[in-house]
Image (cartoon, rainbow, N blue to C red; front, side):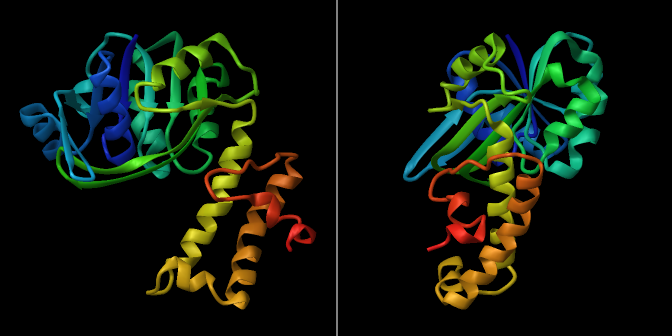
Amino acid sequence: MKIAVVGAGAIGGVVGGYLTQAGNDVTLVDIAKDDVEAMQQAGLTLEIGSQILTIPVKAIEMEQFAALESEIDLIILAVKGQHTEDALRPILHRLHPGSAVLSMQNGLCERVIASMVGEERTIGCFVNLFADYLEPGRIQYGGQGSLYIGELNGEISPRLEQVHRLLQAWGPAQMTDNIWGYLWSKLAYGAVLTATALVDETMANVMEPMENRELMFAVASETLAVAHRLRITPEAFDDWEPASIYPPGNRE
């Protein structure tokens, strides 16, 4: 399987690095020339606590990658949500009928991807990793979080099982028949994170006063209410339990 990780930042770099280390045919693609050059010259370095892991990787700039004609079996899209169309459009010609695009992004980017390549070639992904881009070719990796993949129609397909096996090179990736539930749950969680980031204080201190907590519940509930209207059941992940917030009657 030929794999392209488009967006070699924190998420794409970590996942692409581990897939490469496991012996897969992976190309890391980015628009940042300095990042690509650093990986070409010295490999991709992951700082994992006190451990330094440097992985020789194939890296290429997006412009050069888009000029190629060879087919790609799996594109892992790990760019910012607002860049989805711009990142995918130049490389559509490299997809074949059996190719798939896996969205490792925040938001509901699967809808945009499906509108460009078709739902049958789109795989949803919920990812919550602890990683930060430090400098070209160097990422700080704080350890595994949660990663779920799912077909947009909820099917546990042979293709999904194949990608699931592939991602075990990173860690305990899981399959789900409710990927939309994870994506909407993360949207609600992200709304709380955004709200707490508006002040110069730790998240724990912002959430400590009960009146602040009620405000954050209200912020998250706006997103969860939309999911409810869409008949989507948000899923719990890590320490986030949306069912304890919405409907409001579930709160203790």
